[in-house]
Image (cartoon, rainbow, N blue to C red; front, side):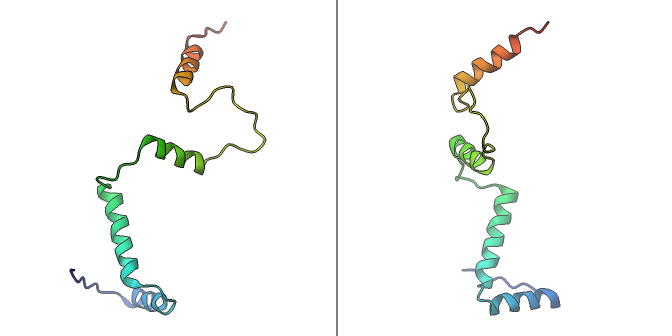
Length: 94
């Protein structure tokens, strides 16, 4: 395992000491920060999420408002959505 030395200014050293006293493992914190930055900048290779997992996360983060009437269209059925979009685009308005 490689050892990494980092110079800290006075404020950062104080923050690190306070975190250490609070029971936070500084090494774990640094590893997590490095992994997070790597994933953000270079992307996570080999761990691609499926479209279903992505949509599940979106639906969980943005649920429908309460007391909203049910949709007539099942948004998870791509053929039904395609028909609805097509019908909406070809519908001529006077």
